[in-house]
Image 1 (cartoon, rainbow, N blue to C red):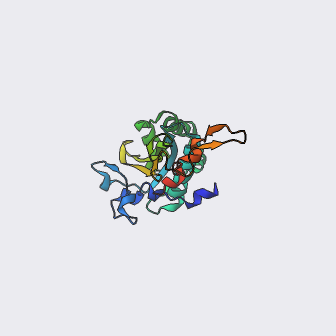
Image 2 (image 1 turned 90 degrees about the horizontal axis):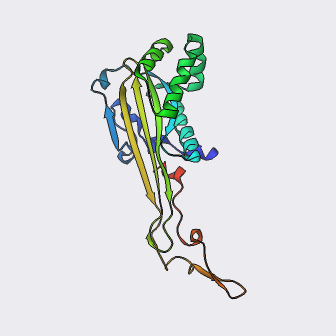
Image 3 (image 1 turned 135 degrees about the vertical axis):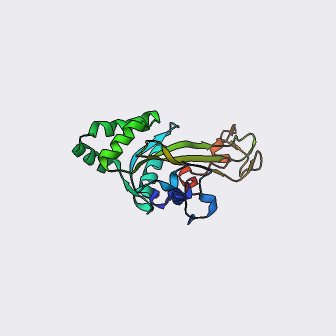
Length: 225
């Protein structure tokens, strides 16, 4: 997990764009697509609850990495919003008598990718929140080029972040980013080694593709690109 301290979410999704101000990171790091509610700039969005990460892909390592990265950035790497994490909110929700409803909201997002507007409005009022922020891992893909062909191995990582307005329960802002990185180009017959080796018995065997072709870039590092 120590490796995660090198990762910075702004490289994959520049949350400075949430406030409509100029990004402090290079333009290439901003979201590929952004949705803003018509009245976004008049909304009071200061204290937000983080409900966690959902995932459209079945990659446990990717989910764990992205969740840790997202929490680290939202809770300590940005200064635009006051983000309250789910563990702290559980205590507040129990004290306010809405513990079960809060847990239901978390499960609904993580398990079903849904956010009930009426529930968010009620929780926002009783917990003193202006909104809710959620994450979504949309892509975590590593592909190795076939050793009999030519091309490049590649990795894709996609993340989306959504902010819901607690006043209405509707989407206030959503940004999506897809990062793609390729290995060096590969052409069959030009890789280091022939792809075939001879055993001491004289029998020739095909070398494993992983030893011949370039591997896809590490997905954790692609999140920085």
